[in-house]
Image: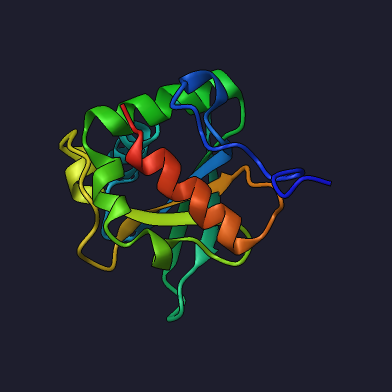
Length: 158
């Protein structure tokens, strides 16, 4: 058995084999916010897939709505990645990628909800973001391999 057997090859840089299994983005709409504006921000951040809506109750009994967009089809994943790349998101994430990949091979980052509403993509600096999760394709499915994949796609982003 060769030492490289069973290990995924580095990402080629081709959008056809982008190693992302799915993208999920979600945000919360508080009672003081206009739900249409929050939905517009989420749509700009992730311009593919349908938005699901879930009514919740906040810690103090206040009404809360969670909006989620989940992208699983390869062409849609590529379209979202191109959108983020054009806005310069990957280099911003790459700065601290080690801390952004969890034990399940999910790359986490947060986009600023207000900026997304204004049709700009920036990493969030406050506590009311659009939470983004990218499930990476990494074999073997180990955190170190997922971090390697994350480094690869962030370094090679178009």
